[in-house]
Every structure is written in structure tokens, then in C-alpha cells.
Length: 192
Image (tube, rainbow, N blue to C red):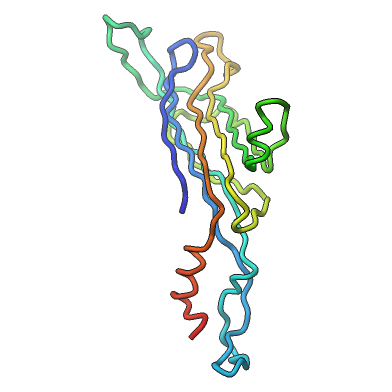
């Protein structure tokens, strides 16, 4: 059910290559209820998912590696890259409803959920962390747009190689839950 995108971008000065991966995790959450027998009476001690209470609990997962060039990239000289140093990286993700996404063309819009974090000096090797959005999305409430970016910051505390930038992307996600609710109902034997 998770949606993943992986992209690689060079910073503006071509000194750093940011390899980023973003995963949108829409977890289905629900309350429990007593299971009922064929006569509608509760079965003591047996709980099953209450799919009428289900909602989506989205989370953002960011991962990146940063590679630093030893020579300026050109068509004649191949670029040699190594992982070294610490880097300041900005993480960003936002969820927009269909209406918010359409309105962005003509006006400034506040997203349904937004996450920003500055990860200050972190080693260049793999960073991976998942963050909650703390927003519920109702099941079957339409299409959502998830915008994301992982960007190396200019301000890394050094005087050289101040390039910024990195990968960014867009995930289109449908909040339809009929299929997963059906699978849970069969798996948990809710009706039988």
C-alpha cells in the first residue's frame, strides 16, 4: 500500500550528489469490537476490527545518501564521488486534497498536512527515519497529492562547496479503502 519514489540530483554547483528516497505510508487504523455469533449475540473474549471506524494514518519516510565530488563534473573528465563530511539537509513533505491541489494554481494554499525538518550536520552515509503526520484521512475521501523534497542546504558550516538542492517528487494517492477492508474482513473472519 505504501508509495515509494527514489531520485538522484546534483546540487546547484555540481559538487554534491543527493540520492534521496521518499516513502508515503498510509496505514489503515481502526477500533475493535466484539465478534457476534450467527444470532447477533457478542462472543465473549473475541474481538474483530470494526471497519466502520477505519481511517488512514499517513506517515512520511525519508532516506538519503550524499556523495561529494573530487573534481568538477564535465563531459571530458568523469566525476569521482566519495561519501565524506557532514551535511545539513532539509526534509519537506505535504499532503494536499484534490481541491487544495487545484487551487494552488491561482492562490497560496495551506496543505492538509505539512512536515518540515532541518537535519543538522549529519554524516553523508545513509539516513533513514519515519515521521508521523498526526492527521487522519477519512477512508474513501478522494484523491490526495503528496509533494516531497530532500535538499542539501547551502549552510553546512564550511567555506567551500556551498551547493544546495536535491531530489523532489509528487505522489498521487487514492484514499479508497474498499479492497483492503475486504481483505481484512476475510482474513479476520469478521462475518463468519
